[in-house]
Length: 387
Ligand SMILES: NC(=O)C1=CN([C@@H]2O[C@H](COP(=O)(O)OP(=O)(O)OC[C@H]3O[C@@H](n4cnc5c(N)ncnc54)[C@H](OP(=O)(O)O)[C@@H]3O)[C@@H](O)[C@H]2O)C=CC1
Ligand SMILES: O=C(CO)COP(=O)(O)O
Image 1 (cartoon, rainbow, N blue to C red):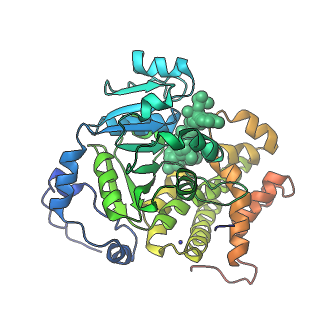
Image 2: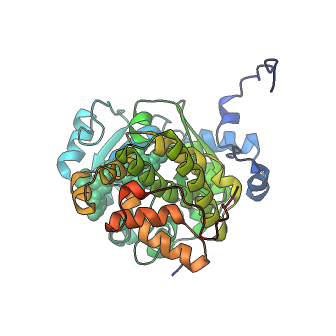
């Protein structure tokens, strides 16, 4: 198992230039200076140069579901020329010819600079960056199909929020393993990023994380436009686990919503859930500040509060009394949390981390815990974590 009062109005800050805004670190966590130190220094000049180069960069997006298509739109509206792989030819045709993806983004017009193809070689040909957005459990087999087609030296970016069943590996680890590329070329994107809101151009921020600050900065410059802002960090473990773990807490919130419990229960579970997420991720080397930033707390809030969340929706069905199999049948989109529960609990056990809320979600999924009995339990020793 491979398993990180103010009374007066503050002065209005001067508006940063476009180049100053892009590619900054996510400093939203309380001790974010730690990750800033860890990240090294990025000068405004360096970011400006990268941004100028990003315009009209040719990029590939693999996966034409709700997030793949939305991210492709973000990239195209940031100035990139985007080719998206859709495994169904009819969907690829719809995207290219009518600039729509009615299955996943009804009512959304896609930009002219975004086309789709069912041919992976055609999509990868000439790509300067590759973004991957397929279900976590199919990633490995999908990568096996493209291993020989990935141009050398090209950054590969995971947009996914799951861990692989059986190995417990994060998506960036599967990418490194299957493509045999330098980890410094791999990046992950995460944050409070509900696809449909972003597809409607509602302002949003995300984190691009890579071991290499250069790679993160390059990707962030490409994945930034007037309504989508990408920050950078080098805490890949924290950024990636944040996205995985908040899904599990969102399932728990969905369950209590389905049961009919109110805001106290939900706030307790979100708060205790964040403590669980932090203990877990830090035990693998993540920085606590990452969990208090966009990729942790930020994504937790978005996913737990929104009916757009598939994980939240799956939980609500469980809380209403549907059995796991029925929920899976009813979900026609990817709810990563359902697949991540077991591997995450196994990883937690390997580090001696107590995750009572995630354990209760597993029990509800298994049918051994009545959803009405889900509660923001304290740790087994009675000591709250992270309080
Ligand atoms: N949706 C969101 O708001 C966000 C999602 N994410 C993450 O992005 C990832 C993808 O999710 P999302 O786009 O929402 O999922 P969707 O369910 O919307 O789309 C899944 C995509 O994967 C394709 N797919 C399904 N099975 C396979 C397979 N065996 N091989 C190759 N492709 C396959 C689907 O193709 P087809 O249509 O042909 O079935 C579709 O293009 C997940 O890890 C999710 O956590 C991250 C941030 C936001
Ligand atoms: O990751 C997401 C928001 O940041 C999307 O959440 P769901 O997968 O639950 O829809």
